[in-house]
Amino acid sequence: MNKTFIHEDLNAVIRQHSEWLANQLHSQRESLFPPDAQKSMRKFTSGEAAALLGVNDSYLRKLNLDGKGPSPELTPGNRRLYSAEDIQALRVLLEKTARKPGDYIPGRRDGDHLQIIGVMNFKGGSGKTTTSAHLAQRLALRGYRVLGIDLDPQASFTALHGVQPELDLNDGGTLYDAIRYEDPVPVRDVIRKTYIPNLDLIPGNLELMEFEHETPRALAQGNAGLFFFRVKEALAQVDTDYDVVVIDCPPQLGFLTMSALSAATGVLVTIHPEMLDVMSMSQFLRMTADLMDVIAESGADMSHDWMRYVLTRYEPQDAPQNRIVAFLRTMYGDAVLNAPMLKSTAISDAGLTKQTLYEVERSAFTRSTYDRAIESLNTLNDEIADLIQRTWGRT
Ligand SMILES: Nc1ncnc2c1ncn2[C@@H]1O[C@H](COP(=O)(O)OP(=O)(O)OP(=O)(O)O)[C@@H](O)[C@H]1O
Ligand SMILES: [Mg+2]
Image 1: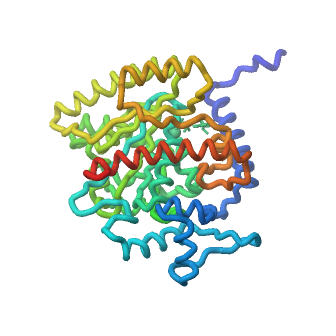
Image 2 (image 1 turned 30 degrees about the vertical axis):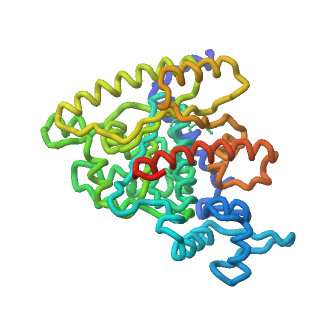
Image 3 (image 1 turned 90 degrees about the horizontal axis):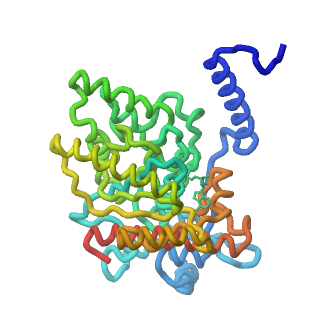
């Protein structure tokens, strides 16, 4: 008998394949990243620390010589290295003697509202998670109080932040717990600190799918209330704790994405500049608009501060990509952010070990590769930070 054609039920085959894969992944992870391993942030050179604080390196050195603030670690070559915690402590110190308040701590002041940024596009692999994670980390390193939320059941954003969705979240702990219809918990119960000062996380895992299943049921029974406000209402509980919330959305236009969209004050649509992606984006935009019409009809306020397109995995030497970028810029003008996220092996390689480029050591890469990638990420994220500042009436 030909073994290829043994008849087995499809469900049994799929289950078997899932188990094989899970076991393989599990043992791979154990060897690469032991379960009790704690992620930590790398140290920063004095030049990087100065740039993050917005001062000169010589001024940082002077502070150190005067015995002010935390002492950096000295390398054998006498270079000074600062931890992210050191940088935050220096920021607080500098702010105390700042000429005007807010010179060093860039977050909200009286009357400024919480910025909730939804990163979305239903096209899988368009760079949502990479964009959200680098944005959240950069803003935190610059001194904003940031909450990162993983709204994707696939939980890549969570994994990037050192929480293993299948191992660490057995008893819940995702945003689902705080937005479900029965016995929602206070949102504070699902927020955890990360190894980066100023950055907190609400992790995700498959349990988030429950919201997609329960919402139609709750709507049919008439007790969903305004389902699309559940994320917004949950975040209202911690409004004063943060300056910026970054939500990494799933690659679909379900109830989770709709709730994030209704909560968002700013929207980033990630777009990989290739024809197939642009075509599917057209559908995404139309469906989003249609769904938002429905939500608006039930009385929701659809006003927002800004919506921008981020070009992701951009290759400047690729002629067809450049034609698409030119086309998008002509059509959407300022709605396309100036700074693209360049495609870089440094970014994808960092991702393989569940790290962002901000976490890996420069020495792990060819210098020019690393520098080009980090420069691209910083320029992009700082352009978004400028938008945030402008929304608060500053530039
Ligand atoms: N700038 C970049 N340079 C190189 N690789 C990148 C870059 N941005 C993203 N990638 C890689 O592309 C893949 C998809 O990126 P990412 O996970 O951010 O997309 P996504 O939109 O979140 O995907 P999904 O829809 O599955 O959630 C990842 O393997 C990531 O490492
Ligand atoms: Mg993703």
